[in-house]
Image 1: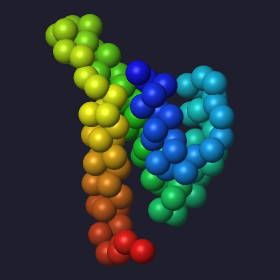
Image 2: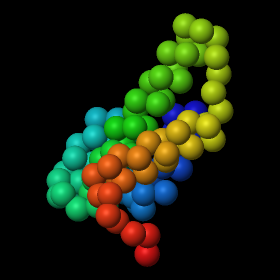
Image 3: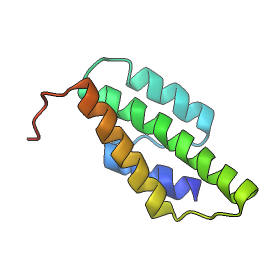
Length: 95
């Protein structure tokens, strides 16, 4: 499930780089997203949210017996990225 979620979020954020491990991904994301621009911030926020929501889903499955669908996790990540970006750039308009 984690690979499916991350694959979808990568595509959504326009990340084409193939990364095999979480460590390699983190290193690449923070190198790539070093800037302060919208795209750089969206990529790093998307990565952090993906790690968090996959971890949260894992804990809910193990400790509470609740299994979440990948599509639900993806949607939560997208909403959170939009919220953070909007708070950082409240005057941004969609092009």
